[in-house]
Amino acid sequence: MKLKKIGHVGIVVKDADAAMDRFSEIFGIKKWYEINIDDLEMLYEGKKVDSDLRIIVGGKGFTKIELIQTRGSRNAYSEILERNPEGDFHHIMYNVRNLERAIISLEQDGMKVVQHGTYKAGTANVSFAYLSGGGFGGLIELVNTTTAGGIPKGDLIAEAQLFGRISKSYTRIK
Image (cartoon, rainbow, N blue to C red):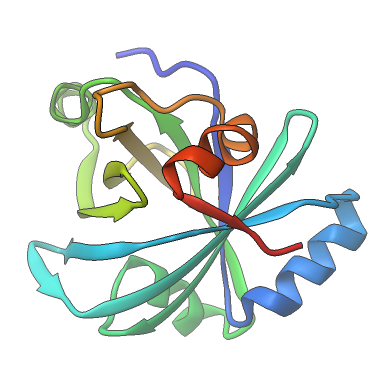
């Protein structure tokens, strides 16, 4: 399977607010949006985990960053904080239209699902999976997002600014 355009780079952080300020300074990102996460169901290494996530996204031009702050059970995000308490690079994300098919294809290429789950963000339904074994230090995240009407998710920042207002998927925080 050939993955298309990178959606964003995910970074696990200890403090999302401090990281947002720091990355605003480094990359000149002026607008940040928090994903409104409800009904999170997540499995890590095949076991259900009880975790709370705070996800903040921002971007400028082609640079899109997702900041992830985690609390609760051990998961693929907390592993990063165990190695580096301040946080670190976590994943490269791709939007896909069929998550199951994309997972099967990447598993045939030798990758393995380490964490996957679902959540609601306003009227959008989000399914995601993290796969390892891609030949680099991070993970690949595959995300399939649809609105209540079945419309696939688009570009992260454009969606946050336009669709996010309608679907209530995002809240602008800066």
